[in-house]
Every structure is written in structure tokens, then in C-alpha cells.
Image (cartoon, rainbow, N blue to C red; front, side):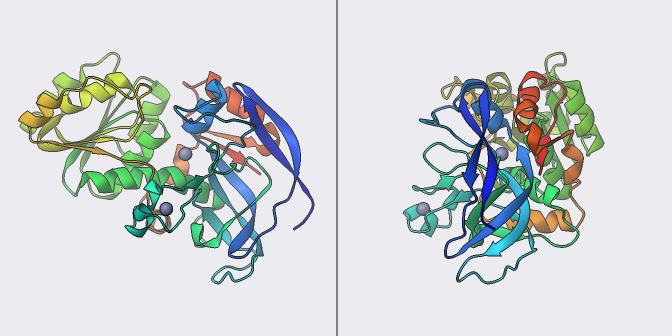
Length: 347
Ligand SMILES: [Zn+2]
Ligand SMILES: [Zn+2]
């Protein structure tokens, strides 16, 4: 496909505008894709709200959106395994394949990563079309929609967190935060047979959703004492805690919620990189502290899990905006956090 396409570009804090660009053409090894759904991620909202995300500061216009699902409309030279009309999930990060970390299989930590909607890396996909290396695209089976394809990105974050924790069948867990990442973490834990998962947040609508998708009990962490509750459990805590809110207060609680030999996995990034953490409680319990950065080698597994029916992924979507309304949609998300659990853009 050749011609012009519409692109929504962020030009500063709370500034997004429409522009027209040439439809990008697939080079060797690439697919040209018509976007069908793109999820709106917390990081998109941070960029929009503050004009930056932590140390990532755009030095010019930046196209947001990195959770894409779409249809292949042209296949670049040398690509095998894809044809026009295939529905795909697109993994937004393109690693170099050459550096030490790529060669060790840790490509999420690539020294030369080119990730969508990250300044100086690559533009995101709040645009009608995109091109992407075929080896970072994954064909969706017939029973997985491109809406679910878009949500494979956050689901992979949940998969990576749960895999890293070592959580297994019959254990217990606490998930702090029930936004998109908290909910997908909960879903993966349940799918892995973790029998009892508790979820805490400060927003009722999100907690109701957590209950709906399998939380044994939910807590308003601003009103209820979750540390006292955890202490009352057998062994004085849960096996695994996942911090997904990126909140300093909940990060500090993590070591107090686990039982001896348990694990803490930090998934959300706290706004301040340095915090005073209770290492003593961790050591007394001989507990593990894990951190995760995005995900790696997980798209096929995540897609297979959704296709197999063990993850009710679609149910986290609370809002759907047409692409023409993406600018007001993103603004609504930022201003109505209590109402929006997960929004997607439909093309
Ligand atoms: Zn995301
Ligand atoms: Zn690399």
C-alpha cells in the first residue's frame, strides 16, 4: 500500500496533534501492517501527561502507542511464513541481535534496542499503518482477535513477572495494583494454578475487575491494613508478592507481606529511583527480590495461552476509542483514572 496516512503525534506535555505522513514501505525482512487495535499503555499516559517518562525525554515529536495488533497487507522481500491477510501481534521492541545481551538470549536488555514510542528509538503506532521486522511479528490463530493481539504486549509483562518469580501451582500471592499490569499478572498466576491471589489497589472499579477475573479477596490498600492481613495467614504471609503499581508506598510494603522463603517481584517502576527499603525483613525471611524489565521470548507462549482459553484477556478492556478520537481518548484516560481500567484504540 502506498499513499498518505494519518498519524497522531505528541509534541509536548498534554499536546497531541494530527499530521499526515507517507505510508511506510516494507524493506527486506519487513511486513507492512494495517493497524486494527492499539492498546493505550500507562507509559503513553505518562508521556502525554508530563511530556517525558523518567529519563526518556523526547527531543522532538514522538508518536505514542506500542501495543499493536493488525493485518499484514504487504510482505517484504525475503520474508517467509507470512502472507497478505494474516492477523498479527507485533512485538514493539526490535533488538540488535548482535550485542552481548542479545546473544545471551536476554534481548529485552539489548544495548541497542529500538522500541516503539521511545525517544531516539522508534515511533509508536498511533498511525494507520506501520512496517516492522517479520521476526518480531507473530501470526494469530483464528480464535485470537487482533484486539487480543494488541493486549499480548501487556500480557507478556505479566508472564515475565510470574515466570521470574517462580510461582507455581498451589501457592499464594499478593498483587499490589490492579491496573492493566496487575490484572494480567493476576490472570497469569491463576492460569499457572496459583490457588489464592489477593489484590490491593485504591480504585474500586479496578478491584471489582480483579475480583471478576479470579482474585480470592481484594483490599482497599488506603483503608485496610494488608500487612496485618498477610501476617494472619498461614506462615505469616504469601509466597509471592508482585508490585505493579509503581508506587513507593506499596513498594515499601512488599517485604512485609511475604512468608519465609518467599519472593518479591518489582514490576512497576516507582517514580523515584531511590527508596529506603526494608532489606532486613527480606533477609530475616531469606526471601528473594526480583526485578523485571519488559519481557523476552514470550509472545508465542502468551498467544498460545490466550488461544487455549486460560486467560480472559479481553475482559480487561473498559474503553474503546475510534482512532479519530485518539487525542481526546488519551486525555480522558489521564483525567479519569478511576474510570478507565484499560483503553484500546480501534482503527
Ligand atoms: Zn505497554
Ligand atoms: Zn542487542
